[in-house]
Amino acid sequence: MSLVGDIILLNVLFIITSIPIITVGVSLTALYASLKKRIRGHESYAARDYFKYWKENARNGLIIWCVLLPFLLAMVVFTSYIANNLENLPAVCAYFLLFLILLFILTYAFPLQATFINTPPRILLNSLLTALSHLPYTLALIFITSIPVCLTLYFPRAFYFTCAYWLLLGFSINTSISAVITGKVFKHYNA
Image 1 (tube, rainbow, N blue to C red):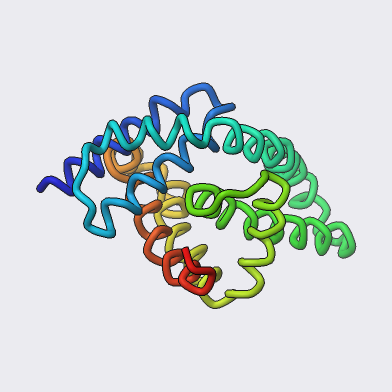
Image 2: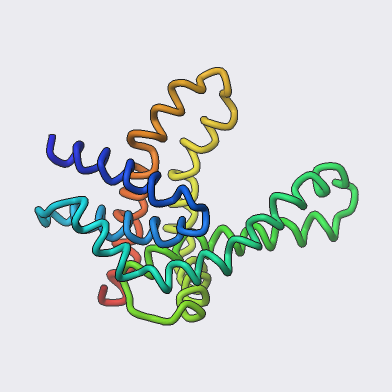
């Protein structure tokens, strides 16, 4: 029960500290580091760990998120253009290539930031290289963690259920899955 309580507490802390959208990257890093510690069986105070990791990773997490956020916004804006111009094959291919690269970087950027000490440009580059080097793990991670997101988007009638899921557990569950899978990947790098 202690683990479930920590998962809910960390999820709520993540949401509260992510409300200013600019701090999402720092919050993701702190959430990942806190949950990774709990998954490895290290008993501690979840809230204290979360804020400790939040403070430690504030600068780099903020920089990484500020670099990725414009690309995410551009992908959202261009999604409607691509949907209306599917006959433009070069644009569709370029869009999906950029989407895949961004997805690969997002998958590993914050776990790498929480696990290794490096500069933000190296974290971003290493995210892409790690994703490509461990493609089966990357695809499994993307597939498993995107299932709740897809269910939320495709079943708007279940809004109250999905809203409760995301408010109480969703971000922590996805991050826990990420911590387990990336832990296997990072073993190759002596994490």
